[in-house]
Image (cartoon, rainbow, N blue to C red):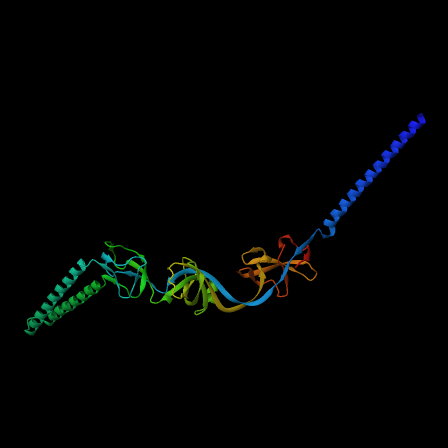
Length: 364
């Protein structure tokens, strides 16, 4: 009886061992299959490979252009004032008003001027009578030659004084010397104004092409720009339009307030009349062309001013970081002066993850 019980216990233990072995075998197979799946998805040998896209640089001759900004003005402007002082009687125009050549713009009160003219007339009449009497007395040998000459001199002085007063009377009003418009009104009716003090600041517009863009240049840019060179101007007031222009004037001295050299570009506006003071941008085309290469904007890394870097691909499928000098930006392109050759292939994607020890894979 005891032997039978012992036999049953051994059979139970054997069954348990068999089941444990089968369970262990099943767990090991699951672990191995998971490990194989991980290995297939993340193989060790490709973990550090960085996919990149490349582009070839293009070489070209770029017409050297100078970019600058400035303000719209007219070819000529002026400060209109009275030659003599007095009380302003009338001002016939306001700021922004257009006028024609010869139009009356302002006048002084003529009360004092009229009195001065009357006094000059009376003084001239008296001097003329004195000279006539002295001449008759000289013929009768009553006056000496010296006395006759003195009265004649007084008569001549009186004539000149009347002419001076009459000249001032004619300039007690402001007449337009050309077509134009009033940009600033500096005084008002009833004010007492000194001789020569500005009353109206005007801009002349004898024709539509009298508008210019006044812009500032650096020393190097000033030497590169010549009279007659072409330019293209865009105005903030008309952003969709591009106006042709020519270099019309070059200043021979720097602007002390801005520290730059002024250049004037005469605008061809095709009938448009912009406001004086409107902001504009200009591209001036100089005669000199430069050999440059064009690269995509995305290829730049760590750009600072006109200095930047790019990665180029070597023959052994490695990347090398190369410093470049930027000439200008244009839309999605960058024009580079030096640092690259026209046969180079440069990296245009994933540059931020690269260094010169990176393993790369070029993709389309």
